[in-house]
Length: 316
Image (cartoon, rainbow, N blue to C red; front, side, top):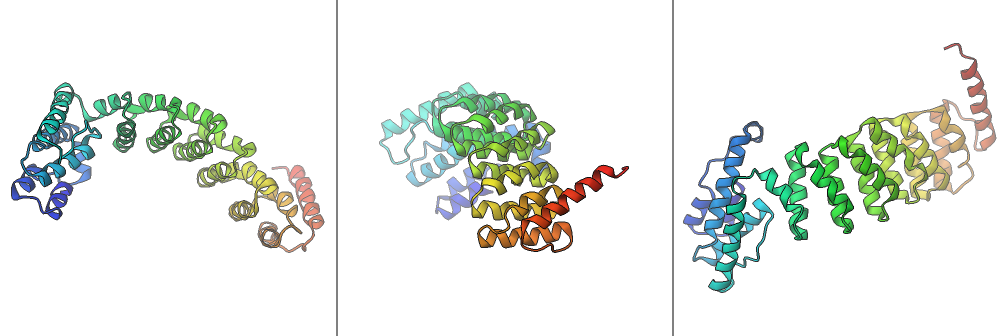
């Protein structure tokens, strides 16, 4: 048990270790997830024991109890293990009042409530914990954080929605991807939409071909290549057109395994550009076409035009 190990490494007294390890954990994570009632009972028992532990006369023990209590709940209430007794008792009172009001709630319910608090750190920890619980019940509350003025909190909410594969949030994530002023938020939204992977999510990623932030485009491409490689072509072609050297090399490397003739004219335009890009584009063209038509763009573009004519006349 993690709490037992932490206490043992910290050299806590036998009483502290016994208290933290008082309950036998369920034998496996799979069993744990199959027994929601036992999961909530374990959570309630752990929090009750940890709050009582804040009254320990041993400051090292109080520190261990408090650290585990914060990890378990995401709440703080100003408790300082080494503070004067009056200050500690006031903080313990706040812990006890909070627990009395929340004991009958499930862990998920009170974590959702935490999202409406003013405590920034508590919100972040609650969002991360909710994402690990794999339940759609928290999605509306997490979506509400997408309007928060703090960019990092929006990012944490976006990451949680991606991890939850929240299809109901695709529209909001697509809006962030298109119009959020913070590039980091747009990149996180692209990643989350890729994790969700629905048709609507992939369509939003395809529309990043005109995105100004190249890293956001690359995030979108990475997600599309995994989910629907051919739908990544418009974004990859846009990176070839206006990306820097590293972005273009990235796009070329992703186009090769897709091997679509539509990429030929876009790659041909790079022949004669800076050497690493030109060389890689030439190699990619050779792989896609199946033969080497030389270092000039013209023969490759002629090949593509002829290919288009043949494809148009094919009765298939």
